[in-house]
Amino acid sequence: MSKTNPFTNSRRDLRQRAFQALFSMAFDSELVPAAQMAYHYDKELEADESLDLPLFLLQLVNGVNDHKAELDTLIAEKLRKGWSLERLTVSDKTMLRLGLYEIVFFEETPDRVALNEIIEIAKTYSDETSAKFINGLLSQFVKN
Image 1 (tube, rainbow, N blue to C red):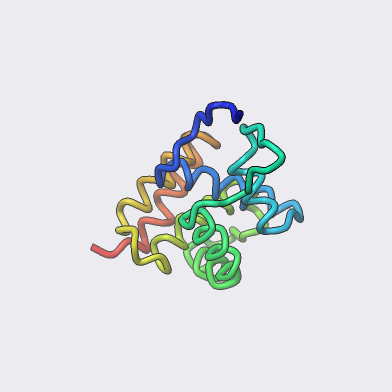
Image 2: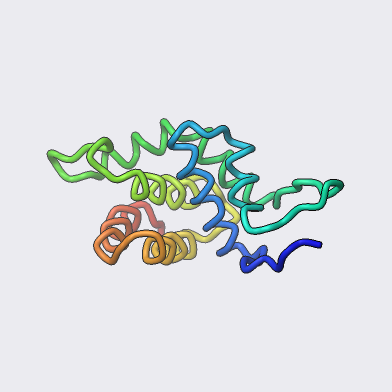
C-alpha cells in the first residue's frame, strides 16, 4: 500500500511538483522521468501500480520545456542592464520560466493567479529577495 502523499493534486501542489521536475531537468534529467520523480518521490509504489501523472503537471513541464527559448528571451529582455540569465540562480530561472509560461502561454490560468502562485513557490524554495525579484519581473507581463 502507498504511503500517504503529503501533496494533493491541487494546482498549487502540482505547480510545486512542476518546479521540482523542471529544476531537476536543469541538471540533465529527462522530462518524463523528472516529472515522475517529482510526483512520486514520496510514494512507495506496488509492483503493479502505474506511474500516471496528472495532466496539469505534464502541461506545465512540457510547456516550459517546449517554450524554453522563447521564455528565456522574454525574461532576458526584462532584466536590468548588466544582468543576464546566466547570472540568475537555477531556482530563480526555473521559477521565472514556470510563472511566465503560465502567464503568457497557458490560457487556463488567470495572469494574477499564476503570478501569485509562483511567488508562493519562491517563498517556499528560495528567499524573500528572490520572491520580490520574481514578482517585479513577472508583473511586467501581467495583463490588467
